Each structure stands twice: as structure tokens, then as C-alpha cells.
Image (tube, protein in one colour):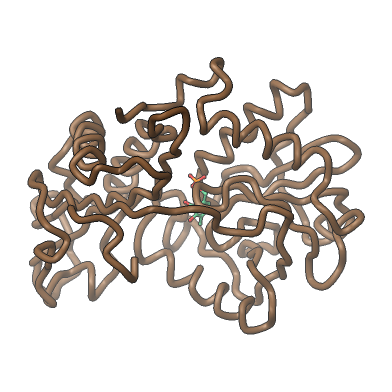
Length: 305
Ligand SMILES: Cc1ncc(COP(=O)(O)O)c(C=O)c1O
């Protein structure tokens, strides 16, 4: 969001010009990370624009807000309408990223955020294409441990959580990797800085259960449904670091990353060092689903035009 991206922003029920969407420096969220947000994609296809799993994202926003008693003045239904209205106002026809953000405003310096604290909601959007290379990325295990439910719950998609992801990303990029995979407090595989992780071993798919240290990813859920429909068995259980080294395939799932293979972990090639067949199959189906090429999955799409 370095640049404007789109002319208009939805701000507390009004559509305002990008230049006019400003907040005071005393905003609580700026000081303490008291915000919750979503990352959503819309895909341009067949002369239309399709928002992917909009409802589920907005419901997760509600749930994240509830964890921190951040009062959301708008229902998921209202925010859904606002998103479509803004896409239209911005004349958005190309694939884009949509960022709803709810934050605590002029609360003062104390930390007792309650349902009576002042809050705001904005929806921002900008054109967006690939996040990672399609052919796969190099990742490392971070020396930073993933945040834990006992301190800052990762299941709530809160602004403050991302300081943990910033540290992990800085470290991995500094060391020449494209992404970091974090272990949880107990040393089991948790998730990447902005994605969930899957392992393929002997044609079976494994992913860490959503226990204490990962976001309940919507792309994770999508990938699991695709895999089940392809006939794969999926096991949710704790995964050790060593299993990453022994995997036939590794892949990440996330709204931004979509389905991205990890082809090298900690300097070791995964399988034969290329995207594997299972990851490739799931990625191909995913890209067809989001562009409305598979009617069975159109339930997940909201057409804009
Ligand atoms: C920490 C983290 N884990 C997982 C994900 C993947 O979630 P989703 O598939 O809902 O985008 C994200 C992205 O939102 C994330 O930031």
C-alpha cells in the first residue's frame, strides 16, 4: 500500500477520496496494535470480477474483533455490501486485494479496550497480482517462535500479531530466503509468516491442527476441500521440524500466496527441488476455482459486476 492503488476508500460508512482517509496520530491502534483486519482477493475473469470467500473473511473479522472487545459497528452483511459498493465506485475490473481493517481510535493511553471504546472500520483496495513465484520458493525455519494462544492468540487476525511475522520475515529475507516457517512454543511446525503449511508424504497430506499457534486460514480450508475432493487423505496433527526435511512436497496456503510450493527448506531441496504433483494439482484447481472456471465451487464467489 505504498501507492494509492484506487481512488476511494470506505471509511465508517462513507466512501471518501484516498487523500481524505486520514486518522489522528493519537489513534490507539497506532500505539498498541489494537486492530483486526482481513486480506481478501478478487479475481478478474470472464468479463467480471469475483471476490473469493468474502463472507468467510468478514465473519473471521467479526470473530477477531470479538476476541479483543473491539466493537464492530457493522455486520458482516453490511461490510459485504460496502466491499461491493467500493469495488464498483473504484471501477475495479482487474484482480485486486481488499483490506478491511477495524481499529481502536481515540481511546486514550490506557489499555482497557472495551465494547464502548471508539472504533473505526476502513476498507482499502488495490490491484494485485502474484505474491510469490509460481514455480516455488525457498524457505527456512525461523529462529523466532510463533506467538501462542496463551499470550497473543494467533487465531485472531490482529495487527499486533504481525510483529512476530515481521521479525521472522526480516530474518529470512536477510538470509536469502523468500519465506520463513515458524515453530510453535513446543517446537512443532506452526505456520509461515503469512501462510498455513502443508506436507505431502507418501501421497498423504498433513497439516498442523489449528490448536494454539496458527491462523484458521480460509485458503487452508479451501485446499483441504480440494484435496478431499481429489481423494487424498488429510491428517491434522502436530508436525515436527524433521518431517519438513523428510517430506515429498511442501506447500503454503494463504490469500496472498494462494497455493505456493516450498521447493527448498533450510537449504535442502524438497523432493526433487521442484513443485510436486500434489501441490501442482491443488494449485491448478485453486486457480480455476477463483476465476469461476469450476461451477461446483461458485458458492465461494461473489461477482461484482
Ligand atoms: C499468519 C497467517 N497465517 C495464515 C494465513 C492464511 O490465511 P488465509 O488463507 O485466510 O488468507 C495468513 C493470511 O491471512 C496469515 O497472515
